[in-house]
Length: 243
Image (tube, rainbow, N blue to C red; front, side, top):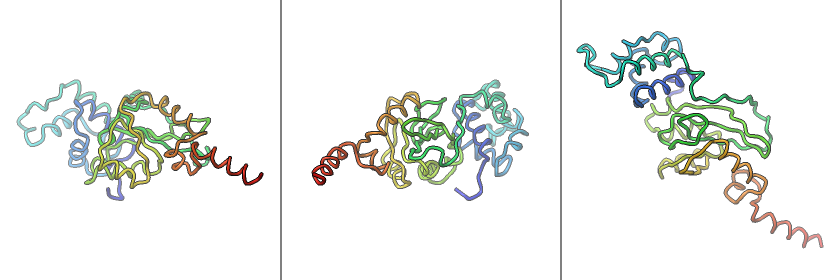
């Protein structure tokens, strides 16, 4: 990805929701068409100038002047335009973000959740609409960010761009992830955890939270502390040495 954002954060959120309203239209294709129409970077003000006819023309492409059918019902076009304008976005399924400042939760982990709907682990790494980013400690769980994958999906290497999007996290939970993508996630310093059955994000994180006090080896390595299986052994060694 270039240093100049393709879309502002708010614009990216609107585009992701509009693509879903358009029968799950490929986000990358929609972004490309919008850039051709409005020029980069895509901003809220630019999206606010679009009309239903503009969107119909964009979706119809080269055959727009012939009035061809674009495969989307009129009401869906209207809903997509409303979302691009920002109407109803705040009432959509994006959960509220908690207040957080770096340093608020000493010793905490940062965890990403692959999501498509609400505050739910229901996404595959390479196709989820967003990553929910949480800060988690033994006594608190805070949703500190929501990162749409719109711009990452316009990159030449989508999986590398998605990995970079969450490279400040230690763990990412996904329903599934392919081997090559997993390698790129690990290279970015993030530990992928597959949970095929998915579930409510906070319930998944409560399970993780319960293991922080006595972490298994893989989690202890991430946290930089001794594993629970080794802690007892180390305590016994210390007792023997002090005897």
